[in-house]
Length: 234
Ligand SMILES: NC(=O)c1ccno1
Image 1 (cartoon, rainbow, N blue to C red):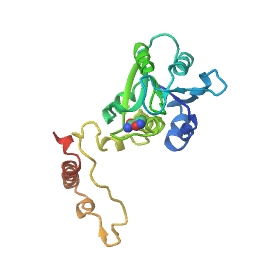
Image 2 (cartoon, rainbow, N blue to C red):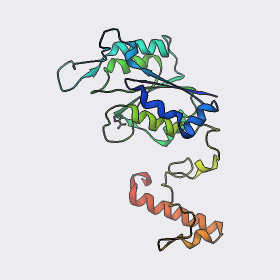
Image 3 (cartoon, rainbow, N blue to C red):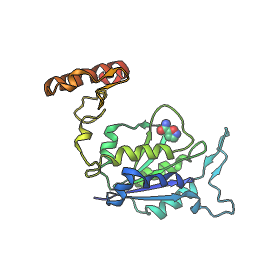
Image 4 (tube, helix red, strand yellow):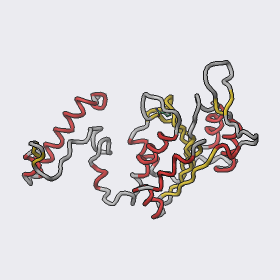
């Protein structure tokens, strides 16, 4: 399966980075197909206007619905299709989690709608919900200047889970938040040299005793999770 990823933004250049590293390799080996679009290509005035003042007053500008609607028509189509997943990165979205990344890694088409200014006219989201499967997703309780960086983060979290993307799928099994990890944070990692600036790799990790190593790692994960993310252990 090839996953098609579309990005709608007034700064499509943000997505040039997807040609680099593993994501670039995923494109080269046909796992993903990436299309970045400039929302202004669906405007019709000299200034290629995409925003206007908010109805009801308030600071800043709101993204007009018209360019979004025409871009949807051109990029996705005018027929409803729930197999298309449309993502609006927004601080008011539901928290984006590893399980959401896992679910999205199995779909064939994802369209990212990257808002700017104060946000997108809500009718755009309401319209999208009548046509496709919509996700309003938040990376965390903070505000970015737009959805582009969040779209890149979500892309990386999703694409790396596509079968065939990671050279060694085993490396996914023990990461933080991996399925079967009981929502535990990953244990501390070490490699050679065994001694570095007066600090040594924990002896148990050099013992070759797999049972003890597994026990040490689980204990470290439990301690780390309890300390940093007690919410995960509820
Ligand atoms: N917190 C977020 O995910 C976000 C997306 C756009 N601005 O903030």
